[in-house]
Image 1 (cartoon, rainbow, N blue to C red):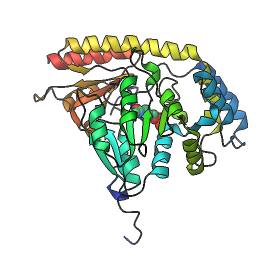
Image 2 (image 1 turned 135 degrees about the horizontal axis):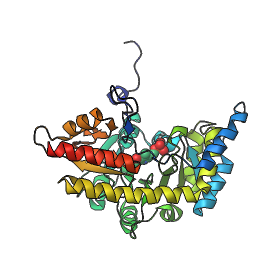
Image 3 (image 1 turned 90 degrees about the vertical axis):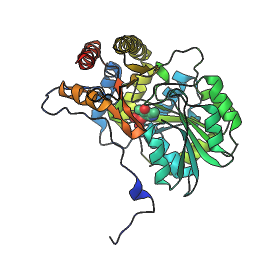
Length: 362
Ligand SMILES: *Cc1c(COP(=O)(O)O)cnc(C)c1O
């Protein structure tokens, strides 16, 4: 080939999203991408529809109205917020701005796959710190970071494990890392968590100029299709991200729907409550079948299957797919023995539980 990309680019395995089809089944149940089974806020949908009259217009490149609405909803300074095409884009931009070839990036063992992509795109080296009980381990992260990590990525709660570390532990991590290491706390599922020792890292981002918190509209707000996320950090970091993002990176329908969504606390509460009940139901059902379920505070469960022939995670995945129930294999995360199952509508949760009961008994 005469035209070669930068070294390392061809080593990247493209991100594989959750499957959406089950062969031969017309309306499968998609529980593979942690989407909100309740849809989105009706107010967000109305705002989206109203925007269809203005599709000829460029959006405000700074997404100012949206940042103000996010700031009001969370008690944050809008000047310390930058919006992105999904929090994915913000993670990519952090890599673009802060990573050079050979730099060290640290994540926990079963960290979100996008961190690996971000590191590889910049030719950086990804180091994974071993987890304990499928949970990030602060001491292992600090050790892996040493004195020269450029970025430490922590999803809290994490996907695909669903586990979290306490607010005190996130602080301990920041305190133990060198000043020159950027700590990125990915809070894609924060709105679902109500454990008393959990807390957002917004406060740390106020105190430290080397902490970035990312949030998304894809999960509890149910707007994954619009690709909308945001980051909160010291103004020096926001300034950097504003220099490397596209001039109109967030589109107008996303801005208008996002403003309506962030204000609709009722929808957020209903989604969280539905998820709480669905999580408890699924944990109880699957645990009752003898399956090992990692305790999750997200909108999904990591379920571990036996290695017995006929009963493996791959067998369970094929069985569920044959019944039109699409879940997420997580072998790419180094978890070939597990499946990640999103909490769905009650009827769909029941279908998964019944199908797995049949599978385990067969
Ligand atoms: C779903 C998810 C996101 C959100 O990505 P978007 O690009 O905002 O849709 C970010 N981080 C983690 C860990 C996730 O699971």
